Length: 240
Length: 114
Image 1: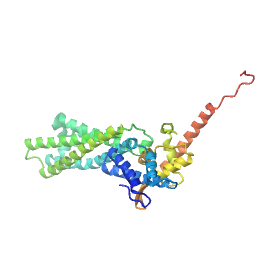
Image 2 (image 1 turned 90 degrees about the horizontal axis):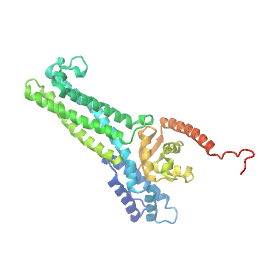
Image 3 (image 1 turned 90 degrees about the vertical axis):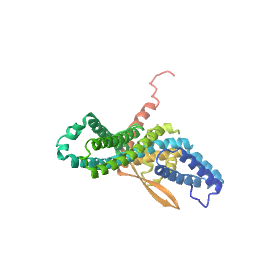
Image 4 (image 1 turned 180 degrees about the horizontal axis):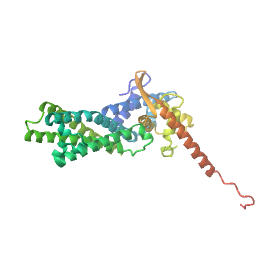
């Protein structure tokens, strides 16, 4: 794990690798983010070891002192947990915000092609004929979509430069991202159920090419969003 | 000095440490220790998350480079970070002046008995 250094003997490398291994086992979050943390701390550990090699200390003693200086892996992992949670929450929210218009646009295109422009009359979305026809389940789905958008933007606000002016609780970004990702998964699931019902009731009306593309996009996003929601929830627990 | 004592001031201290120029993580910690005369000797591993948080807040910018076959992350103070540091300094000056005035022993009134 530690890059070999000519002035480090195997015993010293073993101490540093052992520390980083223990830290790796305790760090929560996505593998890429954890690898970045381990690379940075590994570099710092080598510097700390090097700084202690000037006296009469052996490389192993210097490595042991460096490890001691960094603190026990459980404390370090716990200190990193809120940061890893915030990073994961931000990436999740940005991915949802980026894909939302694409997937939503595909579904709107499918509805427009199947039912014509009248289905999306020039009115607020909750007054669209296609929503009115869907009754309360359609309105519920629309409300859920609004909640996910708000939660995603809240996550972005709570994890970026705005944190200087808007101090937030450490667990808030992960909760907001979990809400956004979980909500997105439910919206996608609802759209797929709606398509299934429409296909059974009005098989001749459904625009299959566009509906297939939209359904595939929703299926993929539903799977990814569910995974992201679970990951954010796990990180929120680790950060608390 | 214990980490709890520095709670609320660590961000400003880290920004001040990076004011003269970019530093990598461990150099920030060494500078913090040296400039405080060894008073601020925090568990090193817990300073890194604070640097990450400041980067996420846009007060620092981090870049990776390769040094001697190792990956190294270097932190630079951003213009937003410089403004935040200036604000932190002003707040601290006001706070320190007020606390010093209160903590100084009150002058003994003339003629008071011991």
